Image (cartoon, rainbow, N blue to C red; front, side, top):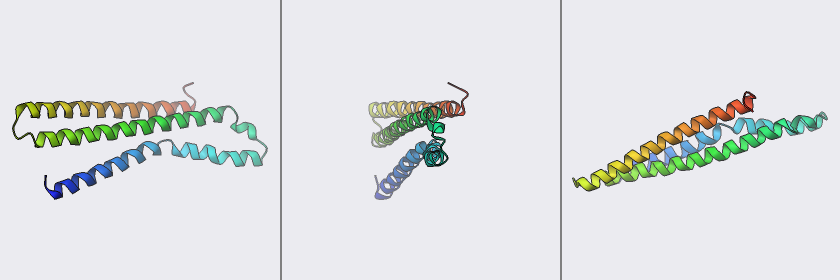
Length: 137
């Protein structure tokens, strides 16, 4: 592998990794900030009951969603590494049918894993949004 290709693929990997982590944590950050900022306002006006039961449940949902999103991001990074690994194995197979088949199977399984992760992320985001809106639960 030439030095240009190695640098380009490394740069692409780090950009995708940074984008995936920030994308997953950005989905629930504004709600967490809103609840964090409500505390002093409610205490100032003597309405601390605003933050007792319902907002505590919302904060718990936000924290659980954040943990799930970080876990899905880490799994996405793992499958991205598997995809790069399978591509490198395929490129270095030099026509050996057994190595090409192994690399193709690894690539296919990594892509299936990525599709499952994206579907899980979409479902989690939808479910958390509905719970926080009060339509579920």
